[in-house]
Image (tube, rainbow, N blue to C red; front, side, top):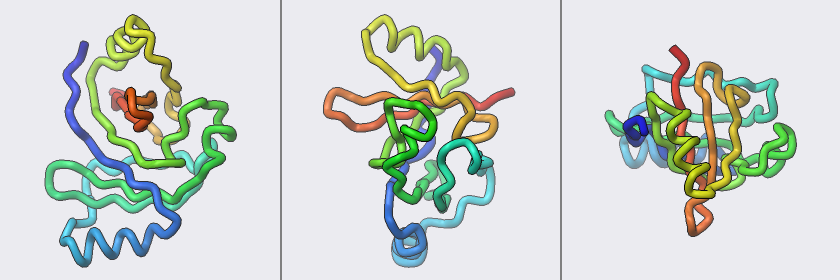
Length: 136
């Protein structure tokens, strides 16, 4: 399986600006300037998102959308609750390992972020986990 690296933590909120002000202005996280994803706002999720960083790991603050899964035909909805996201260079091997372990996942492909092939699944306690690979 390809190496996994922690890429971002996504918190879901009703008020993106309020959360951005808290994490940015009060806690001092910086606005992310590099490696920002291009959101696919016409493919099922059109919410507001703010991107902050501690210099290593990104914090994504996404507007809650309990219907995004229905709009995209996916079982796991990454913007109904927050999620932890890992980046890999071998998504196919991650998918094969999940299949072998009997862990179902939703393959969002590039529906939410241009150039990121994303899958989402639940850990044993029901937390949403993302693994994505950036297209070459």
